[in-house]
Length: 264
Length: 252
Image 1: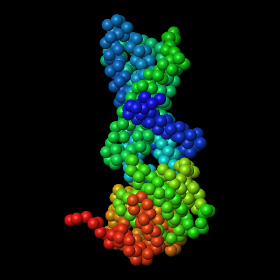
Image 2 (image 1 turned 180 degrees about the vertical axis):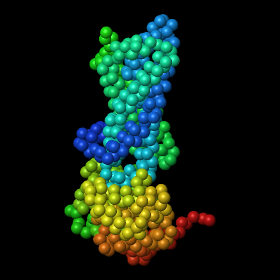
Image 3 (image 1 turned 90 degrees about the vertical axis):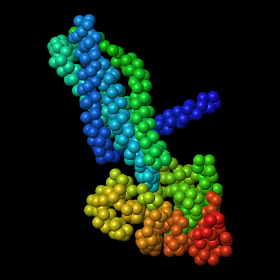
């Protein structure tokens, strides 16, 4: 297999994937071995989970609102305005909720992780940890990964809740959709499996953001410029990875939880 | 050849290549127990790189590093931890954790080693800070300390866990002569009172004259000279003379 390696890009990509996979592996090995510092996990949950709520809520409200309006404009022409509820709901649970939350959190949290760990790297603080016989993965990566895996599903749920609330208000108060039909159809078409899908995606995206953010931080070089570069890379790589992984997750999860019929 | 009782660390044929450049070309050096060894050499000559190998922060391309007879060159991170508990390292800029106060930094090694008694932690931190003349600075953040204070706080973080060996990376670089003298005295005191083995990387001759039991000169990736302070000063070797007297042979 010499040929693909002759492309520098292929080589860099394989190298990156290898490093990220190794970090993920070591992180999960640490978690399974119970090397979890709960105080640090709690602090990270406050920082990551609690602190990301405003971003996620605003994203949810306006996505729900604008998506409702657009669907309404199209569907109303066909006299199907009460179908707005189920379409918005399914879209939010299956795709928009987890993906938008993932992207917003990648921007906010992934960047912060990579900047903080990257700065620690270039100022020898990571080496100081190692010199004090503290494993940087246990101390820095595990708490962030655990905090993300706990927080993200909750944030996804929060995003969807606010999006649906906004959708209901826009549809019934501004666009005059009948509220009873709106809610009835929405409820009839939205299943438990759609919620499971949303939470599963949130969980997977949490791992992506945490591993990419920490990996970028830990491999930072060249001082302040390097920190800037790894922060940008963390956001770009985790956002793109979320979008790509989302497609494959959708295809795989649709086998387990096929898109459903209405329950009447 | 078994581990000799007099040497804490024995390095043989240590080679390291960074960015295609051979920084260390087979370093052989014994570090005697309970003594202070000063490693001299030009800036960028691989002194710090050498020091980082002694605690496993860098893995050599080839060669052997024995700490108390145990080979550490091939150990992974987790198996290096027991070795690192015995050896402390003072980084060039201190490398204090900037998210914690001075108290948080100095108490960190104790907490990580499972000490939970807050009274004991408070007392030990107080003692360590007193030793480096930083009493009363517990609540300051590292960003609000001067360079010398940061280095002394970092030294308090090293000595609080009572290592048997301390590696100093340029402990007096960038400090004024008085603070430098404080650090030199501290290195001496730790060595004479606690029998700490010290390895000091520096190019500061005043500091060397003050603290060294033995001196080694690293040049072109190898140990060019190794001996006592007296032997260093009486050496006729022009390379050593240039280093001691600070001559560069460049035309003005």
